[in-house]
Length: 311
Image (cartoon, rainbow, N blue to C red):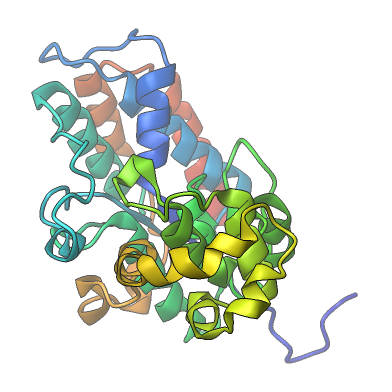
């Protein structure tokens, strides 16, 4: 159906969770590329290809990338000191590739943002709120299930190059809970990847049963025990006691799993910063030379830039 005159469809704002695509390349690609200084650059190669593919296929008008620079200094560490205590800061070689990915993001005309107090997820959440308030449809580009909690209304989450975009209904089908329940789900089951404790004996099926019956954990905690023990899930009779025993932990965990929408970038970001800019082709050529990357990437970038100019 063709929109009627004067009726504008919402413009998409693409928000990239950059780290997942950098580390996916870091762990999956062969170490076939090195910089002029001798550092490995296979993650840079993979990330640059990913970003060029996205720009070529989607030709986005509004786009931004979020990077993680808050390991150990995130506000969540003030809430729970053991948060992500299993992670270590990148060594010099990995830091080189991470910094190079930040650099090439800017060269490709995409705004990159980071914070020492908030994670990339929070930056994406903050930009999603900013974009919605200005009439954008949000496309969260990530494979991280945590970010599924941002899918609201017409929004989608898209693990670009791996899966199809997923709307609210698709998130519910994949995770068993609605997007707005994802943080509560993780607070109940815990998240070993981020060192977030869960309620002992409460696994995914039990958490799903609770959140399919109640809208959120606040409602779970306020419910009569009789309503919980009647749920069709194994161990339902013990659930009221467990929820009461771990009440404070659950509430604390939800503060960790809930994506913030007030990251410091909110005070400085504006719409022009989220508008895609031209590719700095000369800078990209120099960058690829320094990184020891294939010259054919320049030809691809020229093709992407030509399409932007002609758009």
